[in-house]
Structure formats: structure tokens, C-alpha cells
Amino acid sequence: MARGAYLLNLDRIPYREAWELQRSLAGAVSQGAIPDTVLLLEHPPVVTLGRRADAGELHVPPETEVDVVETDRGGRSTYHGPGQLVCYPILDLNRHGRDVKRYCRDLEQALIATLEAVGVEATRIEGLTGVWLERPPRKIASIGVHIARWVTTHGYALNVDLDPSPFTDWITACGLEDTAFTTVARELGRPISVGEVRPHAAAALAEVFALAFEELEAGDGAGLWAQPIHESLAARS
Image 1 (cartoon, rainbow, N blue to C red):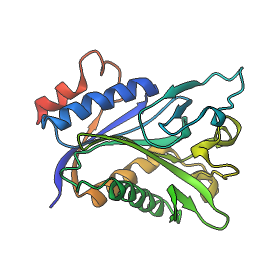
Image 2 (cartoon, one colour):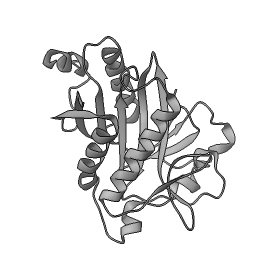
Image 3 (cartoon, one colour):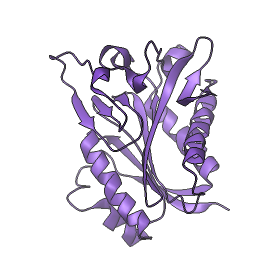
């Protein structure tokens, strides 16, 4: 039976602000003040370093205007930018099985279903996290999560329609040398917006995690941090 959950659609949010929002929501989910909550959004250009990243992975040219942020998520280095759908599920794994590996596989399954819905056949590759296309292998989505008190933060990033060169020019993405990166637009041979993919992402997450979403529109997030959003959501619960 599906559990009630919030789906919060945001527009383009700076990485640090979205991270602070996640932590606020995670505290509220952990306390039972709000149900599971999923954020869908985009970021301005930013390089993020996971807990396993090392200095040799970072080779951003000095003149490049891009934030570099050290995070508490798992994994190594990755890039976020406009044209990439970022999903941050704030889920209490006490409701979904206390199994971190299963959670990551479920995120991969949700991504595979999302891509199938827009006409792209994707898969897993044994021993590697994320979602890929085969022959030749090329990565289309990255996963990095953090779990505290069995509540999840961070999540996945799906390359919808963006220039993938920062993955190879600015960093050694995910610590993988010579990895090819691709986008939904490149695979389809046509432009596609993040907005076109969002409903499919939400439907896949609802199916995989047995969630019944109440969809909330929050525009560009203006004012969300002046009055903590978890208080507004808690008032709805």
C-alpha cells in the first residue's frame, strides 16, 4: 500500500541552499513531523566532492566560475548544472527496509524507469554505481547518498540536456578515468527539457518506493529559507 509523501518541485536552487533545505527536512522526517519528501530541482554550475573524493580528481581551470563544495554524501566528485534533473529523496528507511545497498539499487531502478518513459534504454553496470547506456558504456546518471538515523539525503542527478564536458574537463568524475558521459537529449537526438522529464521521475519514484505523492509547487524557492519550509509542511500534515 502506498504511503503519503510530499513532492516538492523547485526550479534552479544554489547547491548550498538546497543542502541546507535537505537537512532541515531530514530532521522533520526523522521526528515524524512530515512524511517522506522528495525534492526535484536544478542547480547552477557546481562541482561537489563526496566523502571519497581526493585532490587529484579536481582540475577546474582557474578562470572558471563554478562553486566547489565538499559534501557529506557518499561517492567522489561530480558536476551539477542547468539541464540536469537533480532528485533529493528525504526518506525514512525504517519505512522502506534498513538496507543501504537496496536503497541505492532502488534509486537506479527509478532512473531506469524514468529513462524508459522518455525513450532511452538504460541499465546498471556490475560494480559501478549509477545508470549507464551500453555499447559503448556511457554514464547518464550519478548517485550519491547520505543516511543518518536511517533518513536519506542527497540522491541522484540525471543528465537531461546539458553540456557534459565539465565531467571530463573539470574533474575526474566519480573517480573514473576515461569515462564517457551522455545526456537524454544526445541519445534521443533532440532537445528535451527538465520539465518534460520531471513527471516521469516522480511516477518512477512513486512506483519503486510505494509512495502516493501530494505535489507541491514552490517556484524558485524564494523565501523558503526565511521561514523554514519544514514548518510549513508540518502544518499540512
